Length: 401
Image 1 (cartoon, rainbow, N blue to C red):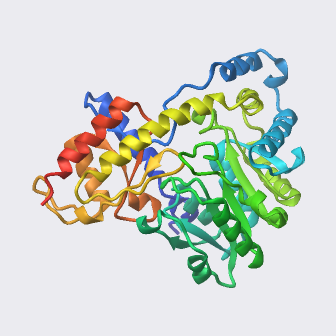
Image 2: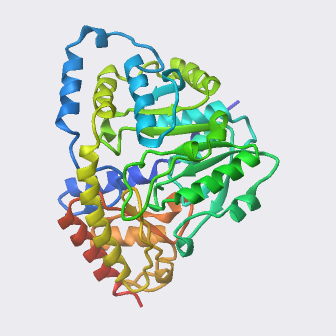
Image 3: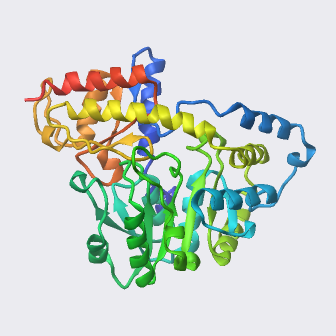
């Protein structure tokens, strides 16, 4: 009997759309085309020197040439607990921390630990591309709560209530948001947290952009806003965005002891310990001050304002002001179906392809984030490239008729 070579479970996984766009842009650049990429979600700054030096020292330490505890270096887990208390006011013991191979592993491990087949997860759309795959791999069912530009991509209690069923187990809450840059106010965070508490839900909160907020926006952790959620909340975070360490692959989850123990058992068989050198670098990062992210935030804020202004000057484009992370998420629905250079793109995916071919600008279509009719553009790139890239897009879209 002929059997499929690849399991149905793995065959169903989609490639990361953001990484695919970034890879295509880099391939075109390597072929000599002057492509400007807005796809990758990573700071364009190098990792701070003191963090790099900590890694170099770790390479020379024989202790780090051997296996270390699967759940993370004890000193790093303690530092993460202290950093969490410092930055968000949420107090946990070091034993309630699991250090993972980047934030993505923390996402997967959390859903694998919490979900049984058929359990539903409320996911506010637009959403980051990895969440659906992690939920699906864990046997969960994703239930979308769709938001749009008219509310600044913020979900209401009424919307959440409408999607609640007897199968709902988890609310995934992300603020600041990737891909929209939406930030919930402290009052909104508390309101949603109390609703989840009242409904008996778990809350999984991804706080990796906690230090990237702008203007009058304020980051608020749902774990702190509603202390009664303590035994039903899992916090995801990592060093990637705050310290420009996307390539170092160090993230973490923290929460109730039984969840962390279960996730640690999973990791002990899946990967064992995270690279010791990367953990030593992360220890230097979370133990230090936040001066590095302050400099990045200043640059991102400047670029954010420039990008939003330029996008909103394009006829047919509507871009709410993002208050966090480093993405803009404009609606381009009014441009779909119009003719541009002999083609009529009917979807944001088709329009993104046309822009890449004709304007040599790479951006990610909204299909990747669960809401067709939009683009995600990262403003974590140089000021000159940002202006040139958006100008090219504006010039091409001006031909729409």
